[in-house]
Image (cartoon, rainbow, N blue to C red):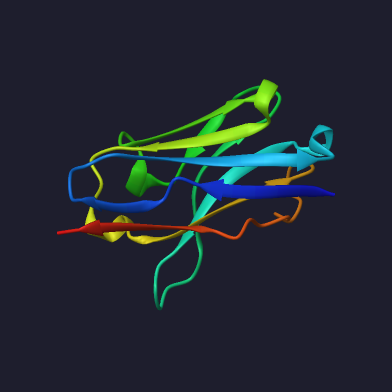
Length: 119
């Protein structure tokens, strides 16, 4: 089993920056890809950004490209999300999750961390 714990959310004005962390513990050797998702009130959960745990390859949803940066530190089994130029539309609960292989279901969802961007 892999356990994930998100941290770093908060309230920030539009145009500001915020950093999130996702710490993994347990059978971390099974991680293939780790990702950030978010869910805003009344909306479905959506993929935000992710990183291949082996190669470091990253991917982003179009709405955050150029503003968010996803990174990892394998030594600390931690994934990060640096969010810049935040917009009110970025307000959501942010979750991290992982895959054990390409195409697998994302699992071990963390408890989420609230990000609120004020206009």
